Image (cartoon, rainbow, N blue to C red; front, side, top):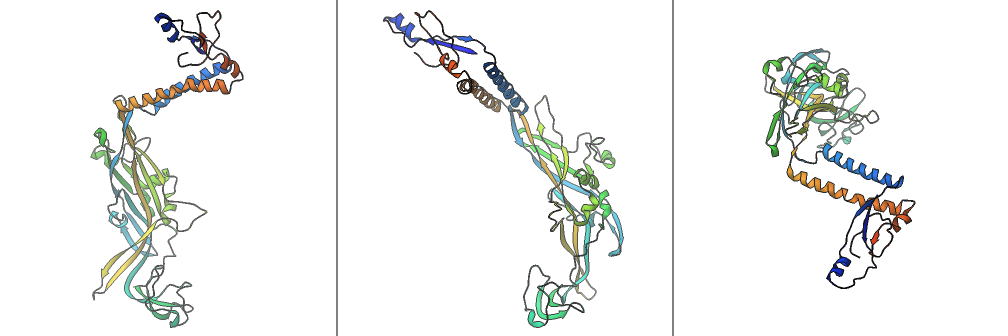
Length: 402
């Protein structure tokens, strides 16, 4: 342990310039001695702090300036399917039918299942039965009453919904949609083989750095035959929907029945220093909507849209579709770092300031936690005197003039 020496407090000034100078100037020297166990352990602890500090500065790249990514994404889905079910007529589906809308904001939706209500017209019909819509006579129905959870505006009449149930009549699109019978197997189960091309351009404005996820060696012929694979084809920007769900830990066919939301995560964490120069996209996939077996209320993802027609006599009609499907959100994130003189100086100063606390911490430890704290406190400072015959051992640090 390093020891410092100072003049003794009892030395008097005997007069004269030289005597005054000898009495007031402080001469310090360091004498190092080592005592096993606690003192030596403190040295090892201090040395470990220094090593950790250097390690953190290098690994965390505190010498770099950083910037956040600015990104833009476009997607293009391809694939087709043919369906022939008891619920609807035989039909051929292409991208214009199942991608809704055709252009999304960093996302796209693929239709996988549906409830279709065809040939609806503006008319009057009995409301669907539930405790708030059933009635006995017209007195139970209020003219002009509407409820957002119901299907139309009441006309004030109580009509037969079936041979056993009567409900209030409403003005609405009739016949009303019955969405309780969702196909147990997805109508567009073939959507698992559809593919999506993701084009992603990123910019780090501070460093004037631009890059795309389509690498420079990729050409049109390569795009026509490639498909993303982490091992064999990690540079291909074309993804099969089934594989996206699989990497997210989901079964596509199970998810397609009620729908859901999958995230395509693109990480652009880059080291732009000339000796590293690494900046390539890293893809990962996960399910974003909540899927809990204990709370299965309103599961999946769905919405409604309609296709409108005119009959031969000019009457407006529509086909209402309650669409279930999978929405794919493309999430781009990342930070780039590059050597900068300012953060280097700032963090170097912070590291040195931190290390300057090491002696004070060691001193506090020896004075507080050591079993021989009294001995350490007694010999903490050595005072030198011209008349002293013996030198006492000192440890620690002392400041000031005696």
